[in-house]
View 1: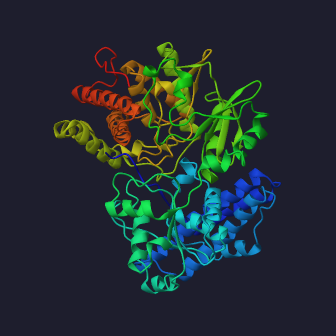
View 2: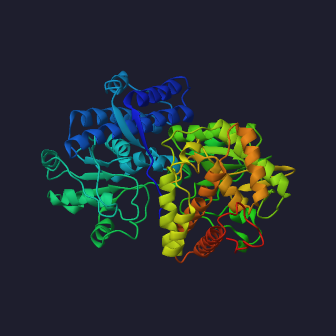
View 3: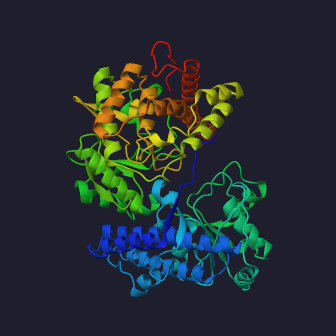
Length: 597
C-alpha cells in the first residue's frame, strides 16, 4: 500500500542559519530552566538538519561519504551544541550556554547554497529525546577512543550527542543508499582505513530505529565487518529496545541479537523515580498533580471514552503519540507529545489559535516536547452522541473555514494531485482488484485542470466522529494539530481534503456538502471547487484503505487487527459505492450503509 511519504525541504543555508539564530536569541532571553534547555535543543535540531543537508550535498557530488572539509566543519559545529546540551542536562538546566566559536562556525557556511533537509521524524512524532542518547552513552562503558558513526539523517545529530557524552572525537556520518530493505554504504577507502586503523577501538553506530528491516544499521555494520572490525567491537545505539522488523535479513537479525546495544527509553529518561522530569514540567503549568501521570498511549484512551470495548474505534496504536492524563485538585489535563524543536512550537501556536477561536480545548502550555491541554472526561464523542445535522455541518464548516483562512502551507508540504491519484490507483488495485482500479482511473478527472484550484493549508486530516466532543451546545475538535505533518504521503492539502473527509466520515448528503462548502467559502474567503471535491473523495477513501490495511498487517494477532480490518472493509465498500454512482456527490445513509469500524 502507498501510505507513507518522505518530507524533504529545499531551502538556502542562510534561511536555516536565521532560524537557528532565532532559537539562540530565544535561549539567551530565558532564565536557566527547562524552557531555556528546550530552546537549546531546538537550535540543535535545526543545526542537525542543516549539517545533514550540507553533508548530503557534498556526498552526492563526490559519489561517496568522505571526511571532506564541510563534513569536518559540520560535525564540529554539532559537537559544540552537543556538549552544551550535555552540560545543561547534567546540571539540571542551570548551565545552558554556547561558546562564541559555535556562532562563528555556524556562519562560516555559504548562506546562498541550496540544500535539501529532511525532517527528523523521531523528534517530531515519536518522543525521541537527544538526552536519551546522553544517558545511553554514559551507561555504555565506552571510552574516548570509540569511533562514533552516525547514520544520516537524524543520526548526524544523535552521533554528536553520543560522542560528546563519551568524550570521543567528532563523529563520522554515512548515508545508506539503495532499496529500503537492502541498504548499502559507500565510503572513501582512505576514511575506512583511517577509522579502522586502531585494532582496539570500539565502534558506536547511532541512529533511530531499527525499522521494518534494520538495513541501515545492518549496512554500516556490514561495511565495518568487511573492513576487518570484529563483531564484539561494534555497538548499536537505537531509539527503541525492539528488534528489526519483519523485512530484516536473517544475517542482520542474527547480528542484531548478538552485538551490544545501548538504549534508554523516554519513560526512563523523564518518568523514572530518579528523574520525574515530565511531572515537574507539567506542574509548572497546572499546579500540584495528584497521583502522578496516567499513561493513556497506544489506544488506551478509549477505555476512558467508551463504556464497552466493542464500541472502540480502530486505532493505529503503534503510531499514536505518547499521551498521559494529569489530574490536579480541580481539573484534568491531557499531556501529549507534540514534538521537539520548531515542530512542537508550531503546534503549540496552532493549538492556542484554535482554542481562542472556540474550536479546541484550552491549552495550559508547552514544555520541551509535550503540550498540556484540558481533558473533558465527561464529554461524549459524536459517534456516541450525534447532533442535529444542520448544526453539525455549520460547526464543521466554521472550523474548516478558519483553518483555511489562518493556516496557509507551502507548495512542497503535501502530495501533488498526481501523487494522490497514483496512490488511489495503487491502493485500490491492491485492496479491491484490477477491475475496480480501472474503474477508478476512468472516474477520476485529469489533474491538469484541477491543480489551479489547490490552495495548500495545514489541513486537519482527522475528521472521524470520535475526534469531536459534544460539550453543551458546542462541538470541540480534538487531535487537531499535526495529522497533516506526519510522515504519511498526504501532508498539507487544499481544505477540500477535509471537506471530503467530513463527507465520508459523517455520510453527508449532497445537500449537506453544498451547505458545508458554502460555509467554508464564506469563512475562508476562498472558493471550493466541486470538481476537486469529486476527485479527492475517492483519493481519501483509497488512502484510508491503505493506512488501515498496513496498520492491520503490522498488528497481526493483536486485538486491534480486527477493528482495523473492519475499517478497511468499510472504506472499501464506500469506494465501490462511490464508483458505482459517479454522478452522486453525497452519501445516502440508507443506500451506503456499511459496517462501522
